Amino acid sequence: MHNCKSIIFKCMDFRLTKETNRFLQENNLIGDCDIVSLAGSSKSLADGKEEIKNLLLKQIKTSKDLHCATEVILIHHSDCGAYKASCCFASEEEEKNIQTEDMNTVEKLIKENFPEMEVKKVWAQMKDKKGNEVEFSILN
Ligand SMILES: [Zn+2]
Image 1 (cartoon, rainbow, N blue to C red):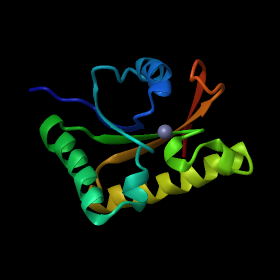
Image 2 (cartoon, rainbow, N blue to C red):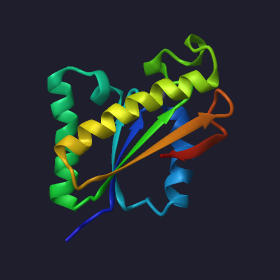
Image 3 (cartoon, protein in one colour):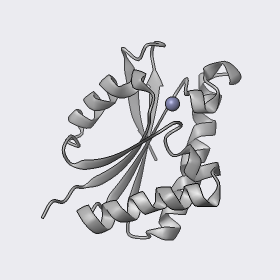
Image 4 (tube, rainbow, N blue to C red):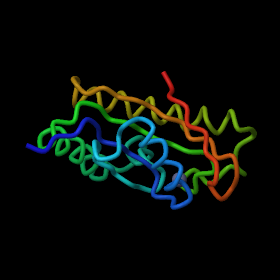
């Protein structure tokens, strides 16, 4: 048996790797999660084409069936290129709110397909453009 607790959707952006690993470490998720790395994290589940959504939902199904994962963690971040970076938003708050709406949409989609899966949403606020410091907050 090789089981893990979670499947994580995170952005592929290399600037987040170091701090995301710290977050995973602090939450005892290193070695206990499957990781899907995509531009914009779960954005394509919120607004992608049907076949892309199906491909991503299949990753959750595989993680659940193969590794008995019981929760999906969505990590979205500020200054994300898939959301055309920070410059297009009026404020940090607006940027966070728009991505949170997408995460809420994705949560609903996941719950429709996998009612027993827990969904956690995490916002990663970059404190600098290089990703040296990132503040993670778990959303409700
Ligand atoms: Zn990104």
